[in-house]
Amino acid sequence: MDEKVNWFDGIKTETWSTLWFEDFVEQLGYEMSPRFKFYCLLPQKTIADGLWLIVLGTNTRVPEEEELIIINVDSSEWSRARLHLLLGFTSSGH
Image 1 (cartoon, rainbow, N blue to C red):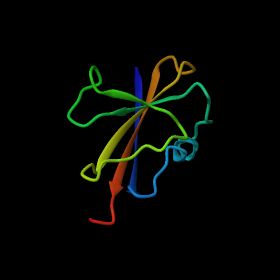
Image 2: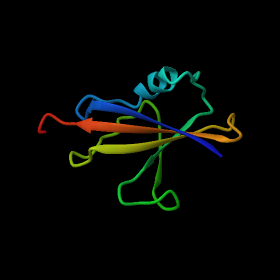
Image 3: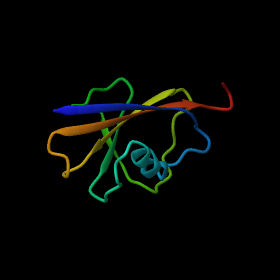
């Protein structure tokens, strides 16, 4: 399986939105599709027990102590590829 990892840094925890995922995907040269599913890998967990489905357009809060969130993008359109977005967060308290 081919995997592609991409880093987006300096995201403010107070203002971020799941609606940004479309922009992230397009910045990487992909066209957004309703078939894309976004999963967050929960801290201290593995892919086997820590994937959490993110519903786009919902208010998803990032815990203050988290500085890095791993987002896995999956699509039935990709037969042998997986895309990972690494989101680096900063808060006004840091």
